[in-house]
Amino acid sequence: MTFVINIAAGIVILFTMLVAMNGYSGSDAEWGLGAYIILALIISLSMSLGAFLLTGRLLKKQFPSVASVLIAIAVFAIAGVVLKIVSSLIGIGVAEFVRVNY
Image: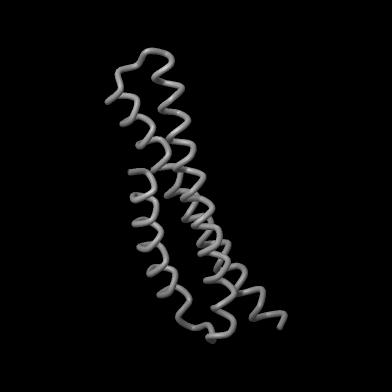
């Protein structure tokens, strides 16, 4: 569930990023979009693994299973969205760097 939420948020952020990068040429924007996609996939996989591990840790502390899952999903979905917003800014920065220097 965490992975699906992160992927959905990543797609929304990607389309927002495309609108924000409207003035860039295609070759400059490709570098920024590529950087964002790589970072977004890494973040999605990391957040999913983190939610899995947190759920296991909470279950070991004898939390109810539904509560453990909901806590893990909430924590890592919110963290994933925040990190994806930061990675979109990094992607725009990469596109700007390529535009200015190359």
